[in-house]
Image (cartoon, rainbow, N blue to C red):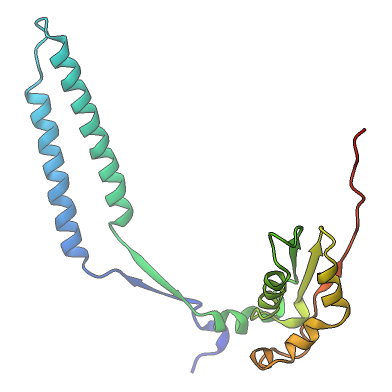
Length: 189
């Protein structure tokens, strides 16, 4: 049995149906190439009919642009690969060296950003699957909402964390900090 340090962090699978896609793409590209050859062979002569020359030029340039676009589009999809990551192996391998993360949730206007939505955002961030001693969540209320201040002062977040949906949170997770700075509004005379 291999150690956890040497388990791969992701698995790569190639796409299915490559042969049919490549045949389809090659047939369309052959058709576009034949149209371009047809345009070059049947180029109008410059015997005083400039309208036909301009029409031919416009058609040729648009078909040339389509051929270039189609070629780029097919080259990107020519060899598709699907990668599945193993997040549990990532935390097993690198949990000791994961950096500390500070997450700031900023709000300004309680009418545009209702307090319940802001608190739900803070709780969602606190539920991240990240080592709790390395995760800090900060709530910045630039609008100075009294309602959010009261929620923070009266421990509403602590009460919400004790409800059944949040009982699975790991103990020791840091609670959000609250910054409240009231800046007087500038008045112009």
